Length: 116
Image (cartoon, rainbow, N blue to C red; front, side, top):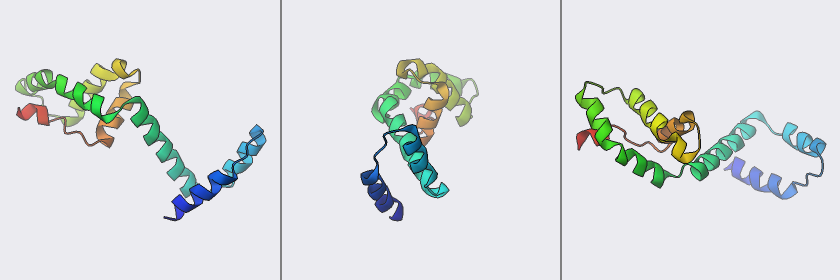
């Protein structure tokens, strides 16, 4: 948990008054730590903009269309994720790429509606 302890310590020391202060703070990070912080920020933003519950509901609502796609011979999970993403991105006011990442991040089984 070295990163968590460092994060806590670093955040207590944050006193940004200028852009130079911020740049100095940022330049002092090791690349591994910076990557970890960025991943946490992306995850937080993704969950804020596209919460798992409402996304799951949207996928369930597309069940009939997914089943029809399967009936017509489509069973490529990546194509299904892309189709779902294009179908629901406007509801969350994000890009289809963000929806696709959220589906994968939450490990939603997009093929499950095909079994129903």
